[in-house]
Image 1: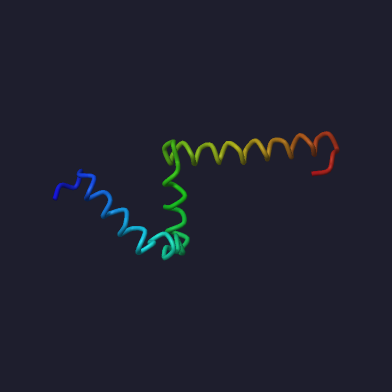
Image 2: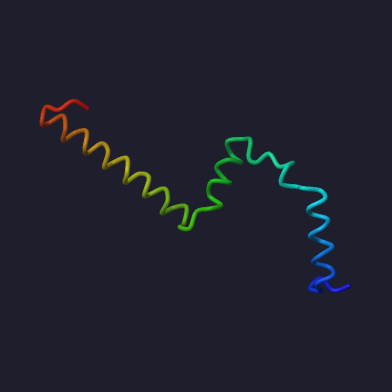
Amino acid sequence: MKTSSEEFKQMQRERIHKTKPWLKTKGAITPEGKAISKMNALKISPELHFLIGEYKQLMKQQKEIQQTIRGERV
């Protein structure tokens, strides 16, 4: 039987709906696994993602410094 045939696809659908694998998954548990899972949906390079995070931190620090200079509460 060819894997591209409609009969095979129907058998596969039935098998999947019978076992319901989506009910048995737990997802990432360890911090390492969660970090890997987080990167799966990333549409940019991990290096660029890291740089954007650093940029956001620097902008937050800059804002806090400006507020301190103006005498505003942080």
